[in-house]
Length: 310
Length: 252
Image (tube, rainbow over all chains, first blue to last red; front, side, top):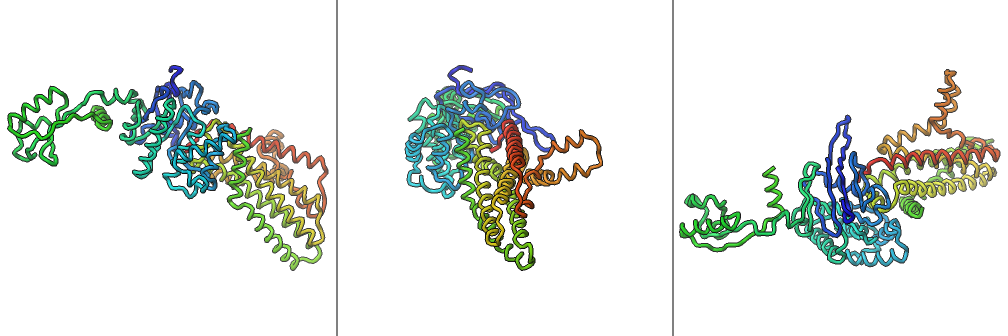
Protein backbone atom coordinates (compact mmCIF):
# COMPACT_ATOMS: atom_id res chain seq x y z
CA UNK A 1 0.00 0.00 0.00
CA UNK A 2 1.22 3.54 -0.76
CA UNK A 3 0.08 6.88 0.61
CA UNK A 4 -1.68 7.49 -2.72
CA UNK A 5 -4.00 4.52 -2.21
CA UNK A 6 -7.43 5.45 -0.95
CA UNK A 7 -8.43 1.89 -0.17
CA UNK A 8 -6.29 -1.06 0.84
CA UNK A 9 -7.51 -4.56 1.58
CA UNK A 10 -4.75 -6.68 3.05
CA UNK A 11 -5.31 -10.43 2.89
CA UNK A 12 -8.97 -10.02 3.75
CA UNK A 13 -11.31 -12.95 4.29
CA UNK A 14 -14.97 -12.71 5.16
CA UNK A 15 -16.90 -15.72 6.28
CA UNK A 16 -20.61 -15.73 7.13
CA UNK A 17 -22.11 -18.20 9.53
CA UNK A 18 -25.22 -19.80 8.12
CA UNK A 19 -27.77 -22.14 9.62
CA UNK A 20 -26.52 -25.10 11.66
CA UNK A 21 -23.07 -23.50 11.92
CA UNK A 22 -22.41 -23.98 8.23
CA UNK A 23 -19.99 -21.35 7.02
CA UNK A 24 -19.84 -19.57 3.69
CA UNK A 25 -16.77 -17.68 2.62
CA UNK A 26 -17.82 -14.65 0.58
CA UNK A 27 -14.34 -13.13 0.18
CA UNK A 28 -11.11 -15.06 0.52
CA UNK A 29 -7.55 -13.74 0.94
CA UNK A 30 -8.27 -10.59 -1.01
CA UNK A 31 -5.38 -8.16 -1.29
CA UNK A 32 -6.20 -5.08 -3.25
CA UNK A 33 -5.38 -1.39 -3.43
CA UNK A 34 -7.36 1.33 -5.14
CA UNK A 35 -5.24 4.26 -6.31
CA UNK A 36 -6.52 7.80 -5.82
CA UNK A 37 -8.15 9.80 -8.63
CA UNK A 38 -9.19 6.80 -10.73
CA UNK A 39 -12.60 5.50 -11.71
CA UNK A 40 -12.35 1.90 -10.62
CA UNK A 41 -14.86 -0.79 -11.53
CA UNK A 42 -15.35 -3.79 -9.31
CA UNK A 43 -16.56 -6.53 -11.59
CA UNK A 44 -17.79 -10.03 -11.10
CA UNK A 45 -20.83 -12.25 -11.44
CA UNK A 46 -23.51 -12.43 -8.75
CA UNK A 47 -22.10 -13.95 -5.58
CA UNK A 48 -18.51 -13.08 -6.42
CA UNK A 49 -18.13 -10.95 -3.29
CA UNK A 50 -18.46 -7.45 -4.76
CA UNK A 51 -21.00 -6.09 -2.28
CA UNK A 52 -19.32 -7.82 0.65
CA UNK A 53 -16.03 -6.18 -0.33
CA UNK A 54 -17.62 -2.74 -0.58
CA UNK A 55 -19.46 -3.17 2.74
CA UNK A 56 -16.19 -4.06 4.44
CA UNK A 57 -14.61 -0.94 2.95
CA UNK A 58 -17.45 1.22 4.30
CA UNK A 59 -17.17 -0.50 7.70
CA UNK A 60 -20.56 -2.25 7.75
CA UNK A 61 -19.02 -5.71 7.78
CA UNK A 62 -16.05 -6.73 9.89
CA UNK A 63 -13.47 -8.89 8.09
CA UNK A 64 -13.02 -12.36 9.57
CA UNK A 65 -9.30 -12.06 8.84
CA UNK A 66 -7.05 -9.36 7.42
CA UNK A 67 -7.26 -5.58 7.46
CA UNK A 68 -9.30 -3.06 5.53
CA UNK A 69 -7.85 0.45 5.42
CA UNK A 70 -9.52 3.61 4.24
CA UNK A 71 -7.11 6.50 3.70
CA UNK A 72 -4.65 4.55 5.84
CA UNK A 73 -7.06 4.15 8.79
CA UNK A 74 -9.02 1.05 9.80
CA UNK A 75 -12.27 1.24 7.84
CA UNK A 76 -14.55 0.77 10.85
CA UNK A 77 -13.34 4.00 12.49
CA UNK A 78 -15.83 6.85 12.00
CA UNK A 79 -13.02 9.29 11.23
CA UNK A 80 -12.02 7.15 8.23
CA UNK A 81 -15.41 7.92 6.67
CA UNK A 82 -14.93 11.70 6.86
CA UNK A 83 -13.81 11.84 3.20
CA UNK A 84 -16.13 9.11 1.97
CA UNK A 85 -19.38 9.24 0.02
CA UNK A 86 -21.35 6.00 -0.26
CA UNK A 87 -24.26 4.92 -2.39
CA UNK A 88 -25.78 1.61 -1.21
CA UNK A 89 -27.15 -0.93 -3.66
CA UNK A 90 -30.79 -0.29 -2.79
CA UNK A 91 -30.87 3.19 -1.31
CA UNK A 92 -33.71 3.89 1.13
CA UNK A 93 -34.56 7.06 2.97
CA UNK A 94 -36.92 8.10 5.73
CA UNK A 95 -40.08 8.31 3.64
CA UNK A 96 -41.65 11.16 5.58
CA UNK A 97 -38.77 13.57 4.92
CA UNK A 98 -38.39 15.70 1.81
CA UNK A 99 -35.42 15.29 -0.47
CA UNK A 100 -33.98 18.59 0.70
CA UNK A 101 -34.47 17.68 4.40
CA UNK A 102 -32.63 14.40 3.77
CA UNK A 103 -29.65 16.23 2.33
CA UNK A 104 -29.68 18.63 5.31
CA UNK A 105 -29.86 15.75 7.78
CA UNK A 106 -27.16 13.62 6.17
CA UNK A 107 -25.00 16.69 5.52
CA UNK A 108 -25.25 17.56 9.22
CA UNK A 109 -24.02 14.07 10.11
CA UNK A 110 -21.01 14.88 7.95
CA UNK A 111 -20.41 17.95 10.08
CA UNK A 112 -21.43 20.59 7.52
CA UNK A 113 -22.64 23.94 8.89
CA UNK A 114 -26.24 25.04 8.32
CA UNK A 115 -25.25 27.58 5.64
CA UNK A 116 -23.04 25.06 3.89
CA UNK A 117 -25.82 22.45 3.98
CA UNK A 118 -28.32 24.84 2.43
CA UNK A 119 -25.88 25.77 -0.35
CA UNK A 120 -24.87 22.16 -1.03
CA UNK A 121 -28.49 20.98 -1.03
CA UNK A 122 -29.33 23.52 -3.76
CA UNK A 123 -26.24 22.63 -5.80
CA UNK A 124 -26.78 18.91 -5.53
CA UNK A 125 -30.50 19.00 -6.25
CA UNK A 126 -29.64 20.87 -9.44
CA UNK A 127 -26.84 18.45 -10.27
CA UNK A 128 -29.09 15.40 -10.00
CA UNK A 129 -32.00 17.18 -11.65
CA UNK A 130 -34.31 17.02 -8.62
CA UNK A 131 -34.69 20.75 -8.00
CA UNK A 132 -38.43 20.68 -8.76
CA UNK A 133 -39.00 17.72 -6.42
CA UNK A 134 -36.68 18.93 -3.66
CA UNK A 135 -39.51 19.81 -1.29
CA UNK A 136 -41.59 16.71 -1.96
CA UNK A 137 -41.58 13.74 0.40
CA UNK A 138 -39.15 10.99 -0.57
CA UNK A 139 -42.00 8.46 -0.19
CA UNK A 140 -43.41 9.81 -3.46
CA UNK A 141 -40.16 9.56 -5.42
CA UNK A 142 -39.73 7.05 -8.26
CA UNK A 143 -36.85 4.56 -8.11
CA UNK A 144 -34.80 6.68 -10.49
CA UNK A 145 -35.38 9.81 -8.40
CA UNK A 146 -34.46 7.94 -5.21
CA UNK A 147 -31.28 6.72 -6.86
CA UNK A 148 -30.36 10.25 -7.93
CA UNK A 149 -31.08 11.57 -4.44
CA UNK A 150 -28.83 8.84 -3.08
CA UNK A 151 -26.05 9.96 -5.43
CA UNK A 152 -26.61 13.53 -4.19
CA UNK A 153 -26.31 12.55 -0.52
CA UNK A 154 -23.11 10.65 -1.28
CA UNK A 155 -21.67 13.87 -2.73
CA UNK A 156 -22.87 16.11 0.10
CA UNK A 157 -19.50 16.56 1.80
CA UNK A 158 -17.44 16.75 -1.42
CA UNK A 159 -15.83 13.35 -0.76
CA UNK A 160 -12.40 12.31 -1.96
CA UNK A 161 -13.67 8.78 -2.40
CA UNK A 162 -17.05 7.82 -3.79
CA UNK A 163 -18.17 4.22 -3.37
CA UNK A 164 -21.14 3.18 -5.46
CA UNK A 165 -22.64 -0.28 -4.98
CA UNK A 166 -24.41 -1.30 -8.20
CA UNK A 167 -25.43 2.29 -8.97
CA UNK A 168 -27.44 1.33 -12.07
CA UNK A 169 -29.17 -1.66 -10.53
CA UNK A 170 -32.91 -1.91 -11.07
CA UNK A 171 -33.14 1.22 -13.23
CA UNK A 172 -34.83 1.43 -16.60
CA UNK A 173 -32.63 2.24 -19.64
CA UNK A 174 -33.21 5.98 -19.29
CA UNK A 175 -32.46 5.87 -15.58
CA UNK A 176 -29.28 3.92 -16.25
CA UNK A 177 -28.19 6.42 -18.84
CA UNK A 178 -28.86 9.30 -16.43
CA UNK A 179 -26.87 7.77 -13.60
CA UNK A 180 -24.07 6.80 -15.95
CA UNK A 181 -23.97 10.36 -17.26
CA UNK A 182 -23.96 11.61 -13.68
CA UNK A 183 -20.94 9.49 -12.75
CA UNK A 184 -19.08 10.62 -15.86
CA UNK A 185 -19.92 14.23 -14.99
CA UNK A 186 -18.74 13.85 -11.40
CA UNK A 187 -15.43 12.49 -12.65
CA UNK A 188 -15.11 15.30 -15.21
CA UNK A 189 -15.86 18.05 -12.69
CA UNK A 190 -13.92 16.58 -9.75
CA UNK A 191 -11.11 14.57 -11.35
CA UNK A 192 -9.35 14.09 -8.00
CA UNK A 193 -12.28 12.14 -6.59
CA UNK A 194 -11.74 8.39 -6.68
CA UNK A 195 -14.85 6.56 -7.82
CA UNK A 196 -15.02 2.90 -6.87
CA UNK A 197 -18.12 1.16 -8.09
CA UNK A 198 -19.38 -2.35 -8.46
CA UNK A 199 -21.39 -3.62 -11.34
CA UNK A 200 -22.05 -6.71 -13.33
CA UNK A 201 -23.07 -4.67 -16.36
CA UNK A 202 -19.93 -4.75 -18.47
CA UNK A 203 -20.83 -1.88 -20.79
CA UNK A 204 -21.24 0.44 -17.78
CA UNK A 205 -17.82 -0.44 -16.47
CA UNK A 206 -16.22 -0.25 -19.88
CA UNK A 207 -17.60 3.19 -20.60
CA UNK A 208 -16.72 4.71 -17.21
CA UNK A 209 -13.70 3.04 -15.70
CA UNK A 210 -10.00 3.57 -16.11
CA UNK A 211 -9.14 0.69 -13.81
CA UNK A 212 -10.85 -2.64 -13.15
CA UNK A 213 -10.83 -5.22 -10.42
CA UNK A 214 -12.23 -8.62 -11.32
CA UNK A 215 -13.53 -10.95 -8.62
CA UNK A 216 -14.66 -14.52 -8.94
CA UNK A 217 -15.77 -16.79 -6.14
CA UNK A 218 -14.68 -14.20 -3.58
CA UNK A 219 -11.09 -14.15 -4.83
CA UNK A 220 -9.21 -11.63 -6.91
CA UNK A 221 -9.03 -12.69 -10.53
CA UNK A 222 -7.32 -9.63 -11.93
CA UNK A 223 -6.65 -6.01 -11.08
CA UNK A 224 -5.33 -3.77 -13.85
CA UNK A 225 -6.02 -0.72 -15.98
CA UNK A 226 -8.82 -1.01 -18.50
CA UNK A 227 -6.47 -0.46 -21.47
CA UNK A 228 -4.20 -3.21 -20.17
CA UNK A 229 -7.14 -5.55 -19.89
CA UNK A 230 -8.57 -4.86 -23.30
CA UNK A 231 -5.29 -4.37 -25.11
CA UNK A 232 -4.42 -1.12 -26.91
CA UNK A 233 -4.25 -2.72 -30.37
CA UNK A 234 -7.27 -3.83 -32.35
CA UNK A 235 -7.73 -7.45 -31.55
CA UNK A 236 -9.83 -8.73 -34.42
CA UNK A 237 -10.47 -8.07 -38.10
CA UNK A 238 -13.84 -8.74 -39.67
CA UNK A 239 -14.08 -9.40 -43.41
CA UNK A 240 -17.45 -9.43 -45.09
CA UNK A 241 -17.83 -11.35 -48.36
CA UNK A 242 -20.82 -11.61 -50.71
CA UNK A 243 -21.20 -15.40 -50.54
CA UNK A 244 -24.04 -16.93 -48.52
CA UNK A 245 -23.05 -19.15 -45.64
CA UNK A 246 -24.71 -22.36 -46.83
CA UNK A 247 -23.86 -25.96 -47.60
CA UNK A 248 -21.72 -24.93 -50.60
CA UNK A 249 -19.46 -22.77 -48.45
CA UNK A 250 -15.78 -23.46 -49.32
CA UNK A 251 -13.97 -25.61 -46.75
CA UNK A 252 -10.84 -23.40 -47.14
CA UNK A 253 -12.68 -20.55 -45.42
CA UNK A 254 -14.12 -22.63 -42.58
CA UNK A 255 -11.13 -21.87 -40.28
CA UNK A 256 -12.07 -18.14 -40.20
CA UNK A 257 -15.16 -18.70 -38.03
CA UNK A 258 -17.71 -17.85 -40.75
CA UNK A 259 -21.12 -16.62 -39.65
CA UNK A 260 -24.02 -15.32 -41.71
CA UNK A 261 -24.46 -11.56 -41.95
CA UNK A 262 -27.08 -9.33 -43.60
CA UNK A 263 -25.18 -9.07 -46.87
CA UNK A 264 -23.35 -12.40 -47.05
CA UNK A 265 -20.87 -13.99 -44.65
CA UNK A 266 -18.63 -12.55 -41.98
CA UNK A 267 -15.13 -14.00 -41.49
CA UNK A 268 -12.91 -13.18 -38.54
CA UNK A 269 -9.11 -13.01 -38.36
CA UNK A 270 -7.62 -12.72 -34.88
CA UNK A 271 -4.49 -10.73 -35.89
CA UNK A 272 -2.82 -8.91 -38.79
CA UNK A 273 -0.94 -11.93 -40.29
CA UNK A 274 -4.18 -13.89 -40.07
CA UNK A 275 -5.93 -11.11 -41.99
CA UNK A 276 -3.37 -11.39 -44.81
CA UNK A 277 -3.95 -15.12 -45.00
CA UNK A 278 -7.72 -14.65 -44.91
CA UNK A 279 -7.70 -12.10 -47.73
CA UNK A 280 -5.51 -14.43 -49.82
CA UNK A 281 -7.91 -17.33 -49.20
CA UNK A 282 -10.92 -15.21 -50.21
CA UNK A 283 -9.05 -14.08 -53.35
CA UNK A 284 -8.65 -17.73 -54.38
CA UNK A 285 -12.39 -18.35 -54.13
CA UNK A 286 -13.14 -15.29 -56.29
CA UNK A 287 -15.71 -13.90 -53.89
CA UNK A 288 -16.14 -10.16 -53.67
CA UNK A 289 -14.95 -8.50 -50.44
CA UNK A 290 -17.64 -6.09 -49.26
CA UNK A 291 -16.00 -4.71 -46.13
CA UNK A 292 -12.92 -5.08 -43.91
CA UNK A 293 -12.84 -3.54 -40.46
CA UNK A 294 -10.81 -3.79 -37.31
CA UNK A 295 -12.64 -4.36 -34.04
CA UNK A 296 -11.35 -3.56 -30.57
CA UNK A 297 -11.95 -6.29 -28.07
CA UNK A 298 -14.72 -5.46 -25.58
CA UNK A 299 -14.72 -6.19 -21.88
CA UNK A 300 -17.37 -8.80 -22.57
CA UNK A 301 -15.12 -10.61 -25.06
CA UNK A 302 -12.24 -10.51 -22.61
CA UNK A 303 -14.22 -11.85 -19.69
CA UNK A 304 -15.82 -14.61 -21.71
CA UNK A 305 -12.40 -15.55 -23.06
CA UNK A 306 -10.98 -15.61 -19.51
CA UNK A 307 -13.92 -17.64 -18.36
CA UNK A 308 -13.44 -20.11 -21.21
CA UNK A 309 -9.76 -20.42 -20.35
CA UNK A 310 -10.59 -21.02 -16.68
CA UNK B 1 -22.74 14.46 20.46
CA UNK B 2 -24.21 16.74 17.80
CA UNK B 3 -24.86 13.80 15.52
CA UNK B 4 -26.59 11.95 18.39
CA UNK B 5 -29.03 14.81 18.90
CA UNK B 6 -29.55 15.13 15.16
CA UNK B 7 -30.48 11.43 14.97
CA UNK B 8 -32.72 11.87 18.04
CA UNK B 9 -34.58 14.76 16.42
CA UNK B 10 -35.23 12.69 13.28
CA UNK B 11 -36.43 9.80 15.46
CA UNK B 12 -38.87 12.18 17.19
CA UNK B 13 -40.20 13.37 13.82
CA UNK B 14 -40.44 9.76 12.66
CA UNK B 15 -42.56 8.81 15.68
CA UNK B 16 -44.73 11.91 15.44
CA UNK B 17 -45.27 11.15 11.78
CA UNK B 18 -46.57 7.74 12.83
CA UNK B 19 -49.26 9.55 14.77
CA UNK B 20 -48.32 8.23 18.20
CA UNK B 21 -50.25 11.19 19.60
CA UNK B 22 -53.39 9.26 18.65
CA UNK B 23 -52.49 7.06 21.63
CA UNK B 24 -53.35 10.01 23.85
CA UNK B 25 -56.69 10.49 22.14
CA UNK B 26 -57.47 6.78 22.51
CA UNK B 27 -56.44 6.91 26.16
CA UNK B 28 -58.64 9.97 26.83
CA UNK B 29 -61.67 8.31 25.25
CA UNK B 30 -60.94 5.07 27.14
CA UNK B 31 -60.56 7.01 30.41
CA UNK B 32 -63.93 8.70 29.98
CA UNK B 33 -65.64 5.43 29.06
CA UNK B 34 -64.07 3.63 32.01
CA UNK B 35 -65.07 6.39 34.39
CA UNK B 36 -68.70 6.22 33.27
CA UNK B 37 -68.73 2.40 33.32
CA UNK B 38 -67.21 2.16 36.82
CA UNK B 39 -69.71 4.79 37.98
CA UNK B 40 -72.46 2.33 37.08
CA UNK B 41 -70.79 -0.60 38.85
CA UNK B 42 -69.50 0.85 42.10
CA UNK B 43 -70.93 3.24 44.61
CA UNK B 44 -68.44 4.15 47.29
CA UNK B 45 -64.96 3.89 45.74
CA UNK B 46 -65.72 5.14 42.26
CA UNK B 47 -62.91 7.74 42.10
CA UNK B 48 -60.26 5.48 43.62
CA UNK B 49 -61.11 2.52 41.36
CA UNK B 50 -61.12 4.73 38.30
CA UNK B 51 -57.70 6.19 39.16
CA UNK B 52 -56.34 2.69 39.79
CA UNK B 53 -57.57 1.43 36.42
CA UNK B 54 -56.36 4.51 34.56
CA UNK B 55 -52.88 4.41 36.05
CA UNK B 56 -52.67 0.67 35.27
CA UNK B 57 -53.83 1.41 31.72
CA UNK B 58 -51.24 4.15 31.33
CA UNK B 59 -48.54 1.81 32.63
CA UNK B 60 -49.41 -1.20 30.48
CA UNK B 61 -50.05 0.77 27.29
CA UNK B 62 -46.77 2.64 27.57
CA UNK B 63 -44.73 -0.42 28.53
CA UNK B 64 -46.01 -2.13 25.38
CA UNK B 65 -45.32 1.06 23.44
CA UNK B 66 -41.73 1.31 24.68
CA UNK B 67 -40.97 -2.32 23.81
CA UNK B 68 -42.54 -2.47 20.37
CA UNK B 69 -41.52 1.00 19.24
CA UNK B 70 -37.98 0.44 20.49
CA UNK B 71 -37.68 -2.75 18.48
CA UNK B 72 -39.34 -1.23 15.40
CA UNK B 73 -37.22 1.93 15.42
CA UNK B 74 -34.06 -0.13 15.13
CA UNK B 75 -35.21 -3.12 13.09
CA UNK B 76 -37.07 -1.07 10.49
CA UNK B 77 -34.00 1.01 9.67
CA UNK B 78 -31.99 -2.16 9.37
CA UNK B 79 -34.56 -4.00 7.25
CA UNK B 80 -35.20 -1.10 4.89
CA UNK B 81 -31.50 -0.33 4.55
CA UNK B 82 -31.85 3.34 5.47
CA UNK B 83 -29.34 2.69 8.26
CA UNK B 84 -26.68 2.56 5.51
CA UNK B 85 -27.20 6.25 4.81
CA UNK B 86 -26.41 7.15 8.42
CA UNK B 87 -23.64 4.67 9.18
CA UNK B 88 -21.70 5.53 6.04
CA UNK B 89 -21.22 9.01 7.51
CA UNK B 90 -18.50 9.70 10.09
CA UNK B 91 -20.90 8.76 12.86
CA UNK B 92 -20.05 6.17 15.52
CA UNK B 93 -22.52 3.31 15.78
CA UNK B 94 -23.29 4.07 19.41
CA UNK B 95 -24.37 7.53 18.35
CA UNK B 96 -27.00 6.02 16.07
CA UNK B 97 -28.39 3.81 18.83
CA UNK B 98 -28.31 6.44 21.56
CA UNK B 99 -29.88 9.01 19.22
CA UNK B 100 -32.74 6.67 18.37
CA UNK B 101 -33.19 5.83 22.06
CA UNK B 102 -33.24 9.46 23.16
CA UNK B 103 -35.79 10.31 20.46
CA UNK B 104 -38.03 7.49 21.62
CA UNK B 105 -37.70 8.40 25.30
CA UNK B 106 -38.62 12.03 24.59
CA UNK B 107 -41.75 11.02 22.67
CA UNK B 108 -42.88 8.29 25.06
CA UNK B 109 -42.27 10.48 28.11
CA UNK B 110 -44.34 13.26 26.55
CA UNK B 111 -47.18 10.82 25.86
CA UNK B 112 -46.96 9.46 29.43
CA UNK B 113 -47.14 13.00 30.83
CA UNK B 114 -50.14 13.67 28.58
CA UNK B 115 -51.80 10.52 29.91
CA UNK B 116 -50.99 11.60 33.49
CA UNK B 117 -52.72 14.90 32.76
CA UNK B 118 -55.81 13.04 31.52
CA UNK B 119 -55.80 10.91 34.71
CA UNK B 120 -55.60 14.12 36.77
CA UNK B 121 -58.47 15.75 34.85
CA UNK B 122 -60.67 12.66 35.23
CA UNK B 123 -59.80 12.55 38.97
CA UNK B 124 -60.67 16.22 39.31
CA UNK B 125 -64.04 15.58 37.66
CA UNK B 126 -64.66 12.73 40.16
CA UNK B 127 -63.64 14.90 43.11
CA UNK B 128 -60.40 13.06 43.90
CA UNK B 129 -57.25 14.28 42.18
CA UNK B 130 -54.09 13.74 44.29
CA UNK B 131 -51.72 15.76 42.08
CA UNK B 132 -48.44 14.69 43.78
CA UNK B 133 -49.41 11.01 43.75
CA UNK B 134 -50.39 11.09 40.07
CA UNK B 135 -47.22 13.00 39.21
CA UNK B 136 -45.11 10.44 41.08
CA UNK B 137 -46.86 7.51 39.40
CA UNK B 138 -46.33 9.19 36.03
CA UNK B 139 -42.63 9.71 36.77
CA UNK B 140 -42.30 6.04 37.76
CA UNK B 141 -43.94 4.93 34.52
CA UNK B 142 -41.56 7.20 32.57
CA UNK B 143 -38.59 5.57 34.30
CA UNK B 144 -39.82 2.02 33.80
CA UNK B 145 -40.54 2.68 30.12
CA UNK B 146 -37.06 4.15 29.68
CA UNK B 147 -35.56 0.94 31.11
CA UNK B 148 -37.76 -1.23 28.90
CA UNK B 149 -36.91 0.83 25.79
CA UNK B 150 -33.19 0.38 26.51
CA UNK B 151 -33.77 -3.36 26.97
CA UNK B 152 -35.75 -3.41 23.69
CA UNK B 153 -32.77 -1.88 21.87
CA UNK B 154 -30.47 -4.45 23.45
CA UNK B 155 -32.66 -7.36 22.32
CA UNK B 156 -33.29 -5.80 18.88
CA UNK B 157 -29.54 -5.47 18.24
CA UNK B 158 -28.98 -9.13 19.04
CA UNK B 159 -32.07 -10.86 17.67
CA UNK B 160 -34.93 -10.62 15.22
CA UNK B 161 -38.07 -8.63 15.99
CA UNK B 162 -40.11 -11.55 17.34
CA UNK B 163 -37.34 -12.91 19.57
CA UNK B 164 -36.61 -9.40 20.82
CA UNK B 165 -40.27 -8.87 21.69
CA UNK B 166 -40.40 -12.19 23.54
CA UNK B 167 -37.21 -11.26 25.40
CA UNK B 168 -38.64 -7.91 26.44
CA UNK B 169 -41.94 -9.37 27.61
CA UNK B 170 -39.99 -12.00 29.57
CA UNK B 171 -37.87 -9.28 31.14
CA UNK B 172 -40.99 -7.28 32.02
CA UNK B 173 -42.63 -10.27 33.72
CA UNK B 174 -39.43 -11.32 35.49
CA UNK B 175 -38.80 -7.73 36.57
CA UNK B 176 -42.22 -7.50 38.20
CA UNK B 177 -42.41 -10.95 39.73
CA UNK B 178 -38.76 -11.61 40.67
CA UNK B 179 -39.13 -10.47 44.27
CA UNK B 180 -42.02 -12.89 44.86
CA UNK B 181 -40.17 -15.67 43.03
CA UNK B 182 -37.01 -15.22 45.09
CA UNK B 183 -38.89 -14.99 48.37
CA UNK B 184 -41.05 -17.97 47.46
CA UNK B 185 -38.15 -20.17 46.32
CA UNK B 186 -37.11 -23.00 48.58
CA UNK B 187 -33.43 -22.56 47.97
CA UNK B 188 -31.42 -21.28 50.88
CA UNK B 189 -28.36 -20.72 48.73
CA UNK B 190 -27.57 -17.02 49.00
CA UNK B 191 -25.49 -17.20 45.81
CA UNK B 192 -28.50 -18.42 43.77
CA UNK B 193 -30.69 -15.71 45.22
CA UNK B 194 -28.06 -13.05 44.48
CA UNK B 195 -27.71 -14.29 40.89
CA UNK B 196 -31.49 -14.21 40.46
CA UNK B 197 -31.58 -10.66 41.84
CA UNK B 198 -28.73 -9.55 39.60
CA UNK B 199 -30.06 -11.20 36.46
CA UNK B 200 -33.26 -9.23 36.13
CA UNK B 201 -33.93 -5.57 36.85
CA UNK B 202 -36.33 -4.84 39.69
CA UNK B 203 -39.24 -3.19 37.90
CA UNK B 204 -41.44 -3.31 41.01
CA UNK B 205 -39.38 -0.42 42.35
CA UNK B 206 -41.35 1.76 39.93
CA UNK B 207 -44.76 0.46 41.02
CA UNK B 208 -46.62 2.97 43.18
CA UNK B 209 -49.90 3.02 41.29
CA UNK B 210 -51.95 1.53 44.10
CA UNK B 211 -50.57 4.13 46.52
CA UNK B 212 -51.39 6.88 44.05
CA UNK B 213 -54.99 5.70 43.66
CA UNK B 214 -55.39 6.10 47.43
CA UNK B 215 -53.83 9.55 47.26
CA UNK B 216 -50.67 8.42 49.08
CA UNK B 217 -47.15 9.55 48.13
CA UNK B 218 -43.74 7.93 48.08
CA UNK B 219 -41.10 9.31 50.42
CA UNK B 220 -38.58 11.49 48.58
CA UNK B 221 -35.69 9.06 49.20
CA UNK B 222 -37.71 6.24 47.57
CA UNK B 223 -38.35 8.50 44.57
CA UNK B 224 -34.66 9.33 44.28
CA UNK B 225 -33.74 5.68 44.61
CA UNK B 226 -36.12 4.83 41.76
CA UNK B 227 -34.73 7.68 39.62
CA UNK B 228 -31.13 6.58 40.13
CA UNK B 229 -32.05 2.92 39.61
CA UNK B 230 -33.95 3.79 36.43
CA UNK B 231 -31.01 5.75 35.01
CA UNK B 232 -28.50 3.04 35.88
CA UNK B 233 -30.62 0.20 34.50
CA UNK B 234 -31.27 2.14 31.27
CA UNK B 235 -27.59 3.00 30.93
CA UNK B 236 -26.67 -0.65 31.54
CA UNK B 237 -28.93 -2.02 28.79
CA UNK B 238 -28.03 0.78 26.39
CA UNK B 239 -24.32 0.29 26.93
CA UNK B 240 -24.70 -3.44 26.31
CA UNK B 241 -26.69 -2.69 23.15
CA UNK B 242 -24.00 -0.26 21.91
CA UNK B 243 -21.20 -2.74 22.60
CA UNK B 244 -23.02 -5.52 20.76
CA UNK B 245 -23.91 -3.22 17.84
CA UNK B 246 -20.30 -2.05 17.60
CA UNK B 247 -19.08 -5.60 17.06
CA UNK B 248 -21.77 -7.02 14.82
CA UNK B 249 -22.05 -6.90 11.04
CA UNK B 250 -24.61 -4.52 9.63
CA UNK B 251 -26.37 -6.20 6.73
CA UNK B 252 -28.21 -3.71 4.55
